Image (cartoon, rainbow, N blue to C red; front, top):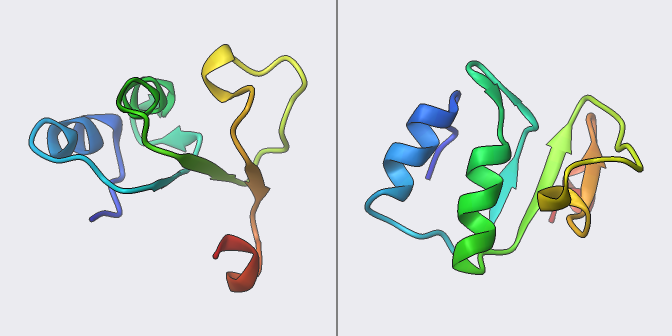
Length: 79
């Protein structure tokens, strides 16, 4: 499913479905994807962050143990 350009779109989809896995961009049209990350974690859905921003050591708890891939990344790296 997706891509979802906003938290609102992603959360609306999650209202009726659960993915096997997800790739999130940390910045969406309506803010960070932390709310989506929280929802995925609560359901036990594995996910990775794919972002143009570098990872930070002090990132939020929802993202502490999440793989972080910086854009651009090779297709093989994403897989």
